[in-house]
Image (cartoon, rainbow, N blue to C red; front, side):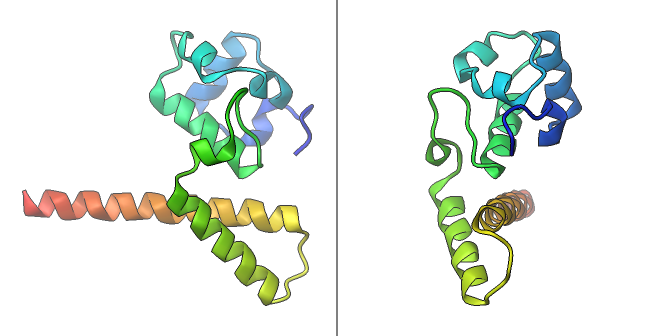
Length: 127
């Protein structure tokens, strides 16, 4: 992803887009120059919005200032992404490496979300 791309290229939630445009953030570069702390000071940006921003940046191999992707993506997701990436290389698909890694992160985040949803529904059944 080009850092000069508009923020809309990240497919952020409406809440995140509105909050970021409210503080004048229009490009991906302007967003990655922000820290979690500076975003947390914005009234309309809470923990969930920050997580949404971090996940969408991580999909593109980006992070907020002062962070690394491994601080955002859980070790399980990172491991799953690597396995998906390696599997796609073994199968000999023709996409370039960056596309493979982005797809792997997206898939791993999706599976992690589904796992938490399943665990949540199991816990509700037990209660």
